[in-house]
Length: 165
Image (tube, rainbow, N blue to C red; front, side, top):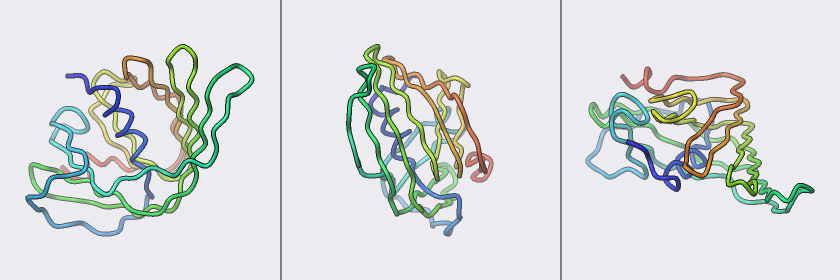
């Protein structure tokens, strides 16, 4: 099942957080900010909470006519929850930078540096389901159909699905 483009972009861009574990949160019956069915972010249903992206700092058009948006710094946390077991893990945010470029073809390029979570869905390149928390650099493109193509991942990585299994 494909995730609609807005939800996919929102999930990808809002998972800005650090690679330092804060504490596991107890399970609750609450709804989560984002809930992904089994087979999309992990083999189990995954909840994401307290997710925010960094604030917009600058917006301009580059010499090729592409819209460029620069986002920088944000504090907060993200909590990943296995919705089947209630097991959770959270990561404290320490600031992230994002450069988002929108080409006239409809393709968007996202370049993160700092702390970020990456959710890969079955239709992505490489295909998911997988969820990774990383501290480093991430570059991916998203086409007009919402398919994410990961170009580069550098730095420390934590496999969230394995951590919560």
